[in-house]
Length: 250
Ligand code: BJW
Ligand code: ZN
Image 1: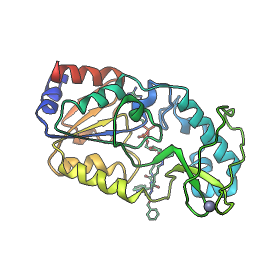
Image 2: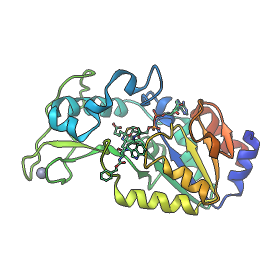
Image 3: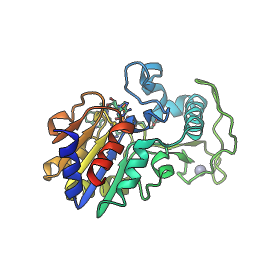
Image 4: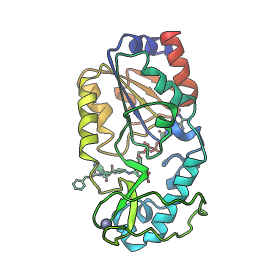
């Protein structure tokens, strides 16, 4: 199905869900996870960095890695893909933006009420008592792999951890519930820049399809979501999304 057909589906929709993954931020300079040469998991070991056990065993390594990524995100900006998603709010009667990303590039492009399924690089909390902790004031970026001691919680003295969802951890309940509700109620779900491999997030586009929504996929590569896509727009998000919005609404 071509861009024109996808634009028509979008133009007729009452409730659109946008479901994004790391690919939408790739053209801003934020690395994805699973792309063969450039993805984070091609250079770093997920089990040693993105699990609660990893933080317990080597908090300095994990905190330093997330500080490196947080500073990287601070230094880049949203791209035309994020901006096209923000523009959708002016065109469709109801829009829900759900992201697996821990960056803040949707918000910086102008999207509001973004549902963050995997947390945020900008919301650290205490690993012991779970209370929110302030962001470190430093603007220095650690080197890749540099160890940095995590701050201490002012309430209980426990180590502060990144406010992201690691493997084996539950997703924030309210975020998952509102994502599932929106997916089951929408008429069009746009899945953008995700490999669709990580659960339960990958259930969201599948739930929309089962509930009768049309699924439009934007991705330069094949994904396991191909079979449920009504329209498969093959290419980078920062090119395809502005073209889609222009085709739908001029
Ligand atoms: C472009 C582009 C361009 C490139 N334009 N596109 C069922 C089956 C098997 C396993 C499981 C299961 N259910 C649960 C599991 C275990 C696990 C899991 O899913 N594992 C699989 C990997 C096998 N899930 C969990 O552990 C989850 N928790 C859980 O299930 O808890 C249950 C529980 C119950 C009771 C008690 C306790 C627990 C938690 C998952 C958390 C995932 N966390 C991460 C890290 C977050 C923090 C951080 O950022 O460091 O989230 S992993 C990583 O993957 C990150 C991402 O959000 C997530 C998804 O990745 P995404 O966004 O799709 O990126 P990529 O790199 O995979 O894909 C990029 C795509 O972009 C590609 O397709 C490119 O082609 C494309 N692209 N350039 C458009 N320019
Ligand atoms: Zn604490």
